[in-house]
Image (cartoon, rainbow, N blue to C red; front, side, top):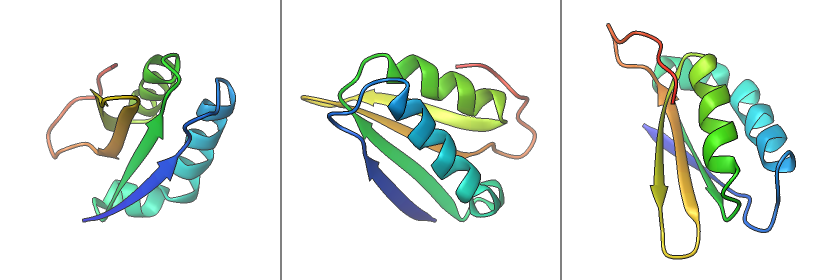
Length: 87
């Protein structure tokens, strides 16, 4: 699986959400097939709620992790047999 990292540190919502949605839509075929994972870096705490909620509503799995000075939001295809869930 390839990982595409998008560094959004320094941006605030809604800019971070719009960037994430643009990347998700631009890479949806690779995401849905499991060939790609998107990894967003953000220092905006609101992004840890808005991006995961939107991605989960689109049917993706989301993992949010706190790093020293930022957050990492990973978005990837749902595992087979998993139900859609909200973050």
